[in-house]
Length: 252
Image (cartoon, rainbow, N blue to C red; front, side, top):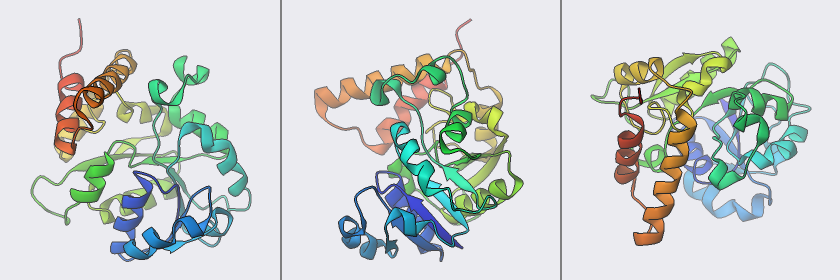
């Protein structure tokens, strides 16, 4: 497939690398232009492009940007055919991104993103750390292969995102439609806990929408505290922290 990846940050770059390694043609773009991406693009086997060019003639568009950037992305999608799935990898962290009233009031993030972009999205790779994308992908059938949730109201989007999740080294687990995508948002036990398929399905089933925002913010506060005290945490430490906070029994 030919894929556009919009956003060359912590998730966009390792994801572009993984998809290119699986044989896909990948256009990588950011907000600053291809000159700023040429070196990294060459090193990971993808094409650096202007964002407007990156989305032309592709089979899927993957968006990996912060929540404040969706308005600018919306303009890039105007001429992208409706049948081309738009896959979003992002997550809302108010302690990092600032407050967004609709999300704080309980709107499902994927539905809010769809409104910002003017078209439905498919959610994938939003429940995985960048370090996990870089180092933990494994061949199909590998023992303990990590599973990642995929959700969409679009059957084609669900199919393509599932194929690409598998190609990036992880078992896809269909979570459901966008109304259910909150079950893998930050603060749930399906988010960044590196679970195999059976355990991920159980985590999705027991998701608690009431306590998830509290646990999301607790995780972020813990990261900020650790970072200030001793520097950034490594992948294993981050996963352990997520598990400690989100895999504990829900309060009575």
